[in-house]
Length: 592
Image (tube, rainbow, N blue to C red; front, side, top):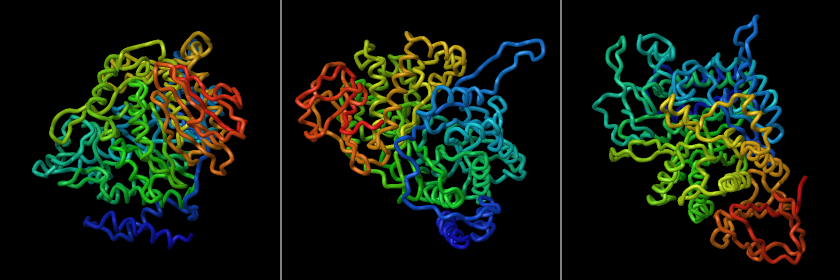
């Protein structure tokens, strides 16, 4: 593809984005600037449409740069030396996570002022407390590296916002402002804080837009200079080895009074533009949109296979939690039957725990108010917290559940029980088997529990699920066969190792939801070349259940195996008894 054709594509995007905006330069000048910023002197490449950039061997681990730290003892020469946490994390990844994981999502590793990295002060720097760009490039040499593009907002302590206050460039016109008389009554809020924050600037009092917090000031993408800054940031990250981009909070990017200011057409077009620029420089790069919104709205970020390559499957965590706490899989089953297969070149990004809480907005319309209330009540009973948001009617409503997944699954709605560990592993067996690419939070791999001390110190609900391990302590627990950390780590690694060898677990392989008896949840996967079938069946209750094999319609001439237990199924077997929370991966072709 030549540069002129690319320019025409970019112009189409820009003409849509800025159709209602009066600019100080021509659209053609904006296009030329963006192309020059992204490509420098590099050649324009021609990406292959609808190409899957992943397979069954791809799994992404999610961690902070300092999820594991190493504090060394001091000596006379160097008092209190400390190893860069990114180096410590890298060593742990190489020694304990590879080859089961293929990619690592390092959560924001930039200088920040709040929100554990999501109030970015400088996008071009690595936080000195974590390491430097060499550490990032070193990680990228061993695994695919995923990084956050915190695109909706930045820190109120950033140089750009300081320049906004002082009326200087760059930054004096980078931020979204509004009048107190604007009709903002329809704006969708993810928090309870006031949307507008009043600040004194050199040019007078301004009311800056703050979707999330008053330390996170929203950009104004109606200014093409802001777009150009982010294209420069993307290029910088590409040059330092980033190959997967997580577009954080991107659904809120474009704002218009009198609208909901979420999922606006201009937002979708900006994503299409960024994809066009990125894939014509590095066709292998993957864009993942982080849109914690109702399921139907979330699906729109695939576009026509021309926006996000992957979308977060945000409905999965609360639906799976509801299923395992209640023993009722009907909501999960109905949701799965309604989910369209991802086109080639797109995939679901499946996760059941992350650095954030378990969002409840994605299950609006999927769970009843009573079911949501039960989730909230049980979360609190198990030591978790509940974060709120302001609903359109002005009331506060639960937004997300803040709790370590290991603790969230310690029992059912009836209270804690002896099945917590089995329930936790069942959740991961389901997630690893589903259509899509699995994302595994490091604290799930390690069986980390609620961090009450971190919560008390910060008074931020999300801190409860953001523990920081000391390396020596962690390694000691992983070496102790009696610790639940050892047992969790090895059980999950076992599932991951099996998954990587099964062609039927390709993220785009066929999936069909099974209709089974109460207490059992299941689905069928078939490899793209149709030579492997996998029946994934799970007892999602605390009672034993019988699986009648006739219900699966197995091909009688094939030999069937359970991959998890590595047991063959006798040819004359009519039924299997599943213990509470037992998982089966039944296949006619045992790969690896």
